[in-house]
Structure formats: C-alpha cells, structure tokens
Image (cartoon, rainbow, N blue to C red; front, side, top):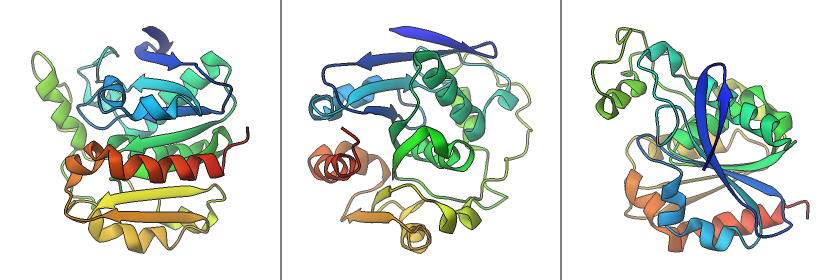
Length: 229
C-alpha cells in the first residue's frame, strides 16, 4: 500500500503490474474501497491485459477522511486522480469507475481529457437536480463525530452540454432496476459521439457492479478495442 499527498490530503493507492499493457485506473463507488475490485475478482482478469492502478478516493479506505464537507467534491476527487498519475509519471490511462467512480470519470473527461485513453462509467449519470441532497454527507457515517460545514449546498453537477464534444471512446452501463441512473442513460449516451451502452436486466445499483460475470466481458472487450498495446 502506498500514498501520495495532494494539497494536504493523503491518498492511498496500489498498483498491480503483471503485464506490459496500458495503465487502467479503477475507481470505486461511494462508501467502498479499492479492495472491492479485488474481492469481486475484477482484477483477476484485467491484470492479464493492463497495468492496474487502484485508488481509495478521499473519505474512503486508507485515504484521509477530512471532516470538512468543503473538502469533498467530484472535481477534487478528479484532482486526486491527476495528482496520483503525475506522481507515478503516467501520462494517460483507461478509466473504469462505478457509481461515485463513474461521476469522477465524467469530471476527468470534463477537466482532464488529455489524461484519458477511454472511459468506462457504470451506474452513473451526467447531471443531478439542484435540490438533490449532498451525497458526501453520507460519508459522515464513516467518521467519528459530525462533518463540518454540513450545511454546504449541493454543488452543481451538470456536464450534459459537453457530451457532444467528447472525443474519447466511452462505455456506459447500468442495471434496469437502478432507479437513480437507468432512466437517464439512454438519453445522455446518445449525445456522446463514440459511446457504447449496455443495460443489465433485473439488477439494481449495487447488484450491477457485483455481477462480474455479465459486466467484465463487455468492459474488457471495450478496453482491449481501444488499447494502445
């Protein structure tokens, strides 16, 4: 286990380097950790084709968990990813994120598209209504004591207008019982020039990520199609 420091926030990461393929960064969902990718056996096959970078986002796993809500945003988590890539001297990666990880992936494509080779965003969406409760308040359940600045308003999250200009290959997927994401995936995926989407029947939000047998073959085929090695 290793760490970097990004503006005072310690970020935990690990690397699985067992082949000569492109780098693939795996970003977990809210309240999960980088070990989930190993426990669900995603890395078992992916490491045969890619050098794997696993990250605990701020507030998760072995990374720092600041109590100030202002220290959490999807953009700050994308900044952490870039700081990690810079530290490792990695120019570009394939990015595979689920749930929160997918949201961070959209921020990467928004602010740092030059650092990506492709994006896989599962169980995510490209905008939230302005009155949606701040998702990062859920992190308070992982901490001892209340989060500071808990009255911080939800930060705007809407990159739909950017989608027609995305030049990178994108893969999105969702379960059709995922009520927070499924209703929107068809609409926004059609706006992305080079986007592939698949929907898994009868699966809700957590079940979709856990169904590696259906998810991984599709993801791996996509990543291999856009591999540079």
